[in-house]
Length: 324
Figure 1: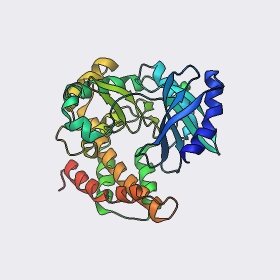
Figure 2 (figure 1 turned 90 degrees about the horizontal axis):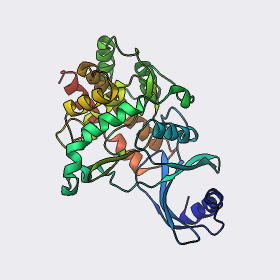
Figure 3 (figure 1 turned 60 degrees about the vertical axis):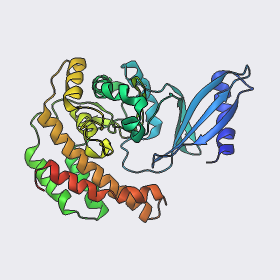
């Protein structure tokens, strides 16, 4: 979709929403990132001259997402009611047969390198791990009946089938499946909540004071809430920084804040198990995204580059399992 096509498609929808027949779209800009979503930033200019900063997202490829973007609007609305900092949903529906969302544009930074290294975010880095703990606790209180489209999958059979279906065996991944199967904590499965599924550095909008919004909910599903904490600790999401939680904080900061907000203690051993699951999952996702490119389904340099990261996850898994 080009800028002109975007304006043509969205202008009447937004004009009806805001009750302003003279509304126009200004400064549309395609944003980078998001291999499965097309994302644009733009302003809705009202007749009186006021500007409404917005973001448009639309599906462009079906990958491993467990639910369609047509359900994402309901999830974001439920998250907001639960106290999760999220962009406000303005419109959702379909364009040219593909689900889309229009959301309020939240000012801030999402690029991990800047969040982790720029002096302007030094104060944010000191608070982010605790803020993430509180946000995750809020996510895990979203009522399940508010998001009926979300489903639960046993992670190991799901990712086992995914890897087998890709037809690309990796010995380190086979070892991880064996390790995880032999060490699955008894508590896994005792509690079912909404799981964000991709809560990590890169999917957070951050200001100098810290967390402003949680974005990119397309991997949301039902599951063990500790899955989200383990995913946030996966080494890939530290982007070269030493701190184990997103590159910006400690596990103690994350766990203590989560426990305080959720009213329940965090078992580090359970989170470690989910960190191993997360590392294995990301490795398989890297293969899947590269396969999407190599098969010709969606030709993308980004998808191809992600495929090159498979070996990093093999190395990280061996470290986590104490097998290297």
